[in-house]
Length: 103
Image (cartoon, rainbow, N blue to C red; front, side):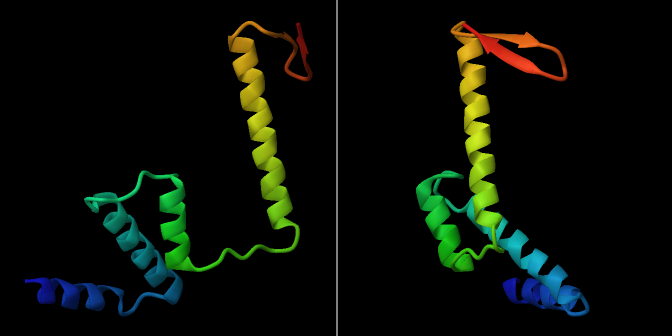
């Protein structure tokens, strides 16, 4: 049975361009990780390390890593501001064009 499925899968991807075949492989990896009995929790350090083992080291274009890190920092600051507003530590004052936080 498994041999027949593998044959059908090979026939199904045979005429696809390489980038589409890579998408099929990525999807198979997703299914494998999703339904694995001892799969680490998504986003955990163990899951990230497993993913890096499968794809190899990350490669970035010039300045891309700096941009990503700056965006992550901006999101953290936005989360902190939201938490402070929800806790009543600061108030959000302003219009759609500008926002100011006051104690």
